[in-house]
Each structure stands twice: as C-alpha cells, then as structure tokens.
Image 1 (cartoon, rainbow, N blue to C red):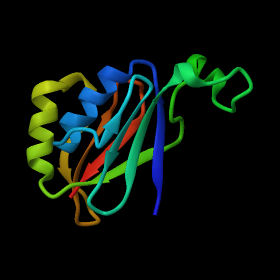
Image 2 (image 1 turned 90 degrees about the vertical axis):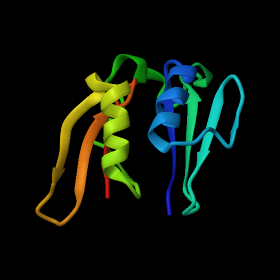
Image 3 (image 1 turned 90 degrees about the horizontal axis):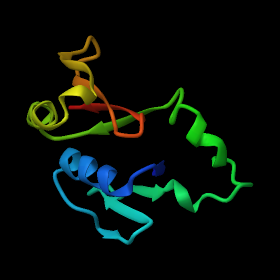
Image 4 (image 1 turned 135 degrees about the vertical axis):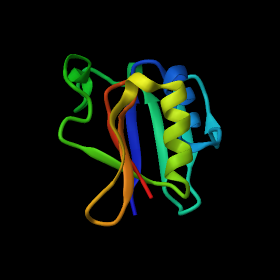
Length: 122
C-alpha cells in the first residue's frame, strides 16, 4: 500500500481541488501541509513546496513539469458523479472525458492545479 506526497505551489488551491475530488475535507492540516485519508488506509499528503531545502531531491521541481511520467490512479464508488462535479467546477483540468475502457472500467483523466496527472476510475 502506498501513501503519496505531492509538493504543491499553492496549498489552499490544492486543498480545495482535492476536497472537491475526494468529496471530503482534510483529516489534518496546517499552513504547510494537508492530509487526506482514504477508507482503504491510503493517504494523500499535500506539502507546500516552500519547505524544500536547496539540497532536497525535488528542490529544482519549480522549473520542471511536476509528476512527469507518473499517473496517479484514484478508484471511486461513483465515477460519473465525480466527473460531473469536476466538469462543473474544473472543466479546464479535464484531460480526457469519461469513457468506458476496453479493460471494463469507466474513467476520466484530469490534471490538478500543479500539473499532476490523475486517472479517476470505477
């Protein structure tokens, strides 16, 4: 099981985006970090990138594309409801529309405010 940490430019904007996506608020937060916890035991930690020291592995990420080559997969109970909410609130963040996939899942793809790529799936 994975716990995921994303370094973000504007923590409040990311908190609002993920609250909309998950349909619930943070389990814990302060001015530099916010934690969302899933029922499956997984978690998403959003950390303001200002905490990164110059010698941190991700310190140069402000000049690069975040999450390059990574697709975060979020299974949800009602993918159509989540798609409709994201479509209404964040239409420009949708990378691919809701579609039935050959492997039997219904999903859509979005890009969060920092450029992280997510697949929301049934």
